[in-house]
Image (tube, rainbow over all chains, first blue to last red):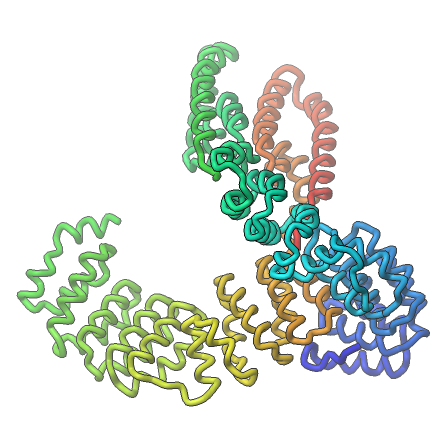
Length: 320
Length: 320
């Protein structure tokens, strides 16, 4: 493993454990509270050679994330092929992103071609870090895509948007798959590339992007749609079909109907709570004077009207 | 503010100017009305050197608006005798005051202003840095070396020219990557990647734990251009702040105050459940008595607590 000089401060204790070849102690230090000690321990384990492989593989089962991360780093440095299967298992398990990413990168470090079938599908992952890690690892393994789709996925994973655009229509299906990325910046880039390509096949994706929950993606989709030949009069209709990100009008109305004021608070009016407290005080006093039910009979028609007003108030709130 | 209302009614800057009432005009500087404050600044500036002494004394006042106005007036007077007092203001805790001092020092046309302005290039606030750079430019300052140019371009946020500096001039970046403005951090990270210096590695690994998602991603991309081993990416990323609701807090809230645990998890109907519970509890107290109410409701509260805990536990984590 590349030396960490400059990255971590020297920890003499780790050095002596390394010299003594005390692998269990080094593994214990992978869970140290100080990140620099953890990183130093991982580096030391990476120099312990093949005899450290079985305990490190065992450490992959630890419930502590830093231990798993450190063990993967060390296995990546030792480059023993016995680690390939356990690392493949980690990638398959829907666990923590950092652990999966470390396993992907470690497979690239180990250099076994057995890892390629696991890494190639990761280019289609909805997480950009995993895609990027897989691209780095596959590059280390000397893998070359043998079809247009894999080429497009690799270029997308490497964020080589210029090259993706150069692929033209062939990249459109891959861009469609990656559009499910949870990161809005990636979706924004994809829509922009599609707009630059001006491919009519991209219309379906533009339609989806116009309903995206991110306002930036929606705007980029408007710009791209024009280039992809989508009728301009369809754009407002598609945009209106988006999932609303603002307050739910029905919820606001129901809250104001049952608990006058809370609905206003829900749609962001600071005075909602004072209104609610006043309403409750009046209601309790009225109940003391008139009995338990009559105040409700008087209040509910009034709060129903206010509820309807709140509904329209919430609906008019712009979230475009 | 009430005091301002009184001040606006009573303040006649023109009359004070006619009387050359310097202390009166200085008092007006703490007005919250920018129009009145600006008129007082201009009036004091027109009075000239006679006002310098009282204005320098006013710089020691606690009121930030007064200090800002006094510096503005000194900038208009352009008396080089105020340079050392203005240089002291470059250490003021309020960033607007430091910015104003940087602008004022630029107006002085004195060589003595260069040293405090150079320290302003290293300020933690981008406005102060920008003001200092502009003032230096106004005074014909030319950095003597690569490092000086790097500080200057960084302050001007001239990212294109900053890319051209040699890798030995990385010091300004340590300042930029700690900026509170995410856009500054993003640009700084991109430039670090474009320069591609190995020395930037430790900073980039730290930035993988940045609170902003896009800064983290840019740091990941830049780190690869700076030859940071890919295996270090997961360990850096692992340091990112995790914004996740605490399942125990959600459970505890729902047990003690049923519904508020849901509210804590962002469910709009949590407050409704809370209100329903209060109403039901009050009626049960009246109908069934205290102990029977508790016997009836506590198992339900326990269920609600477990449900809130379960919901929080299974909430998806924010993407990296």
